[in-house]
Length: 411
Image 1 (cartoon, helix red, strand yellow):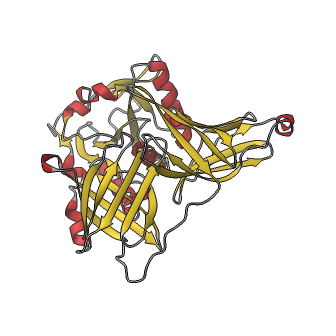
Image 2 (cartoon, helix red, strand yellow):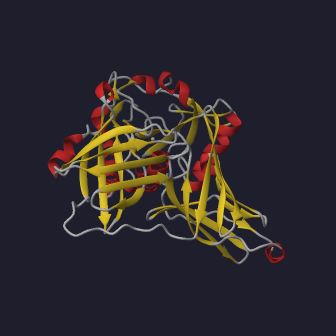
Image 3 (cartoon, helix red, strand yellow):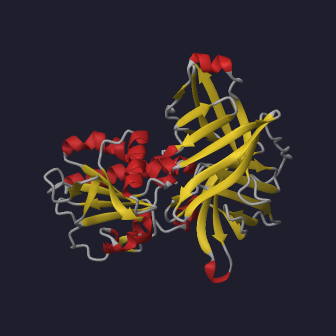
């Protein structure tokens, strides 16, 4: 499941001729407070920032303190287009009085989704936080769903007055930079990052527990309840990523051949990879957590490739349209400045039947990171990635990956 989507990387910008800026209404620059409504009654808050400097427009999608740069920003005097090309998505808005209204669109496996949004320059009111109320900050053990469909998640919440941030963590990573309010009794957290569209509503019980509903873009509510965890309980509430997925046969040698570009195949038997320890990221350009992992892997690659480390990403895309898939992979690599190869490994629909996923037990989804020794046997597998929204777990995840790389090189 989540970029680094949520980084402060410089945005690509659209260059507007000076004559165009003078001959049309000024672009709607500044800070905007927006609401996406994928279905009636489901309101998901996010922010927008638009800047114009030297005839150039740039901007970012904002969730709390997390900012994700738009690929390009353009203004034709009537419509503002905010491209999220790395997700094959965009926001298009028009001025409506003092505000803006428009539509978010994104390509998905079944076609395309569209959702209306509106934006205003007026910041939403922050509720007052009475004294001596329940402190939200900390880790919470969440049980999501009912009956046999109950699943465990770990919530990590942070509180600054009545402002709340945090995320949920599962077996494939976190739910992105959720943000909202906490008034001591009621919690509202939302995230819209170009892919994730989530809203978590909760209230406190008399025993200090929390409960409420969680909704995705479908709007169907899923009940949840949570209790506070101490450090020891939080560490064991979810299974560790290395205990979730494992090779069916630890002695089996991984082998695959996929295109890095049309007509150019990369194989583990190629001279650049043969007899080298290899980190393999099973990912997809549509996956926010994969966007979070990619720059971390790039940093490791730049620091350890001189010692023999190789890294390869296998990207499973939405459709069999190779042209589209290579385009999205190119955007993914450009966004994060990747120098290691990213291969088009097929569709996400058929991923479980392809190598190396077919060699795994307990595979849950994206990203999954494999550590192959010099004989290309899987010596370690990691399910999911804890990104920047997880607080202290993010640097801990980076340290764990580096230690795994060091151990791999030492074999």
